[in-house]
Amino acid sequence: MFRTFLKSAARQLHDLSIKTIKPASPTPSPLRRYNLSPIDQFSPPIYMPIVFYYPNRVSNSLQDIADKSCRLKHSLSEILTHYYPFAGRLNSGAYVDCNDEGVDFQEVHIKCRLSQVLEKSEDETVDIVFPAGLAWGRMTNGSSLLVVRLTNFECGGLSIAVCLSHTLADAQTFSSFMTFWATKMRTDSSSEGARLFPHFMSFPVNEDVFVSQFPDVKKYWVTRRFEFPNSKLAQLKTVVDELGLQNTTRVEVLTALLYKCAMAATTTNSGFFTPSVLFHPVNMRPKILPPLPETSMGNFYWSLTIPTTKENENNFNALVEKIKKEKKEIRGMKSLDTINTPLQLEFARNNYNIFMCSSLCKMQFYQVDFGWGYPSRVTLGGVPMNNGFILMDAPNGDGIVALASLEEKNMVTFEHDKEILAYTSSCLVSKPP
Image (cartoon, rainbow, N blue to C red):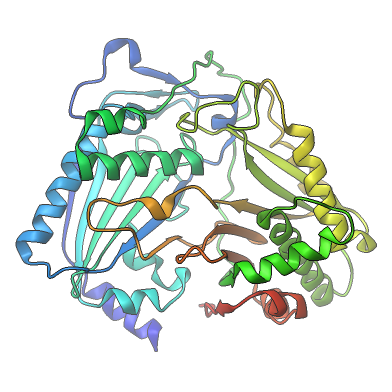
């Protein structure tokens, strides 16, 4: 029934406007070329899609809605003078031509209530709140590196969906950018904004680095949203603490649980175990020596690699131990000049099942306040791959929300796994097309 509603809602999108937002001040000539790092160049050339939902906390008139839109565009223009590469265009995969061509800002009105969208899954609403085709979509030559859509709901609530080039930014850069934008609009204070200025690193020109070839794959997986409250995660941590693994984190134990149960579901449905590997990207800013500022712009992650070659290795405690060991080994690295992401290709060539778990927890997305309060929900436009997991803070701060993507038959088995049921408080089912 909701699928019918979505089709109807999509037809009722109206007053769509698209405007190009350029930096408030021209980018100086010495800054017109922004060289990409090796990790930037290997990162997939796709858009990361994150949407922020804001309920109507006051009575909004048409003038109020127009004022918000105007101020969003003005403040975006102001901060693009600092995040100037976002307003440029990729050139040859090695650098950004910071030519101030600008970013796309879309605005649309929809005849449905915000609450109706929040009741449903990311897969079912992606075409309503995100720019058409851009959620995890491949970037094309000459395309805008940042696209924003402001959606006004008939109840007065709104959403701000942002699609940002993964070539230029990881999740931490995304968070820093949104925090700066919201702060600029809310306070317009130069002193408040100064601490949020992006920190740029200098990289040499590298035309020969391997550039990511992110394949075009027709979606064949389904997505579910699972909520794990802190009380349940504390119980999960107790399991490994009792076996001598001290100071485990919520993300470590949840990542191990998701990987374990997903492997088990795949094995059950195939009838045999396939060697598997988990890639778990980690923000390296606080781990490298010397540590990098939180606002360092670009991709600064390292993918922990957790191979599981035999079925008897699919053990929760052992997986947590491997994750902690990998994290310990990367702490104190002095350089990210080398990248380990090509390992994914090596495991794929050897017919491993590839799993990915990325955490956006503690990245302040729920602190993005443009002046009308914190968002009631922040989420993504689904998950970009099969066997993928994305972790985010729960809206009320109580726990972690996991977006999970698996083949439909594996998802059915996964969501009925006794361990998943024991530690989750709810699961929102997304029906396959």
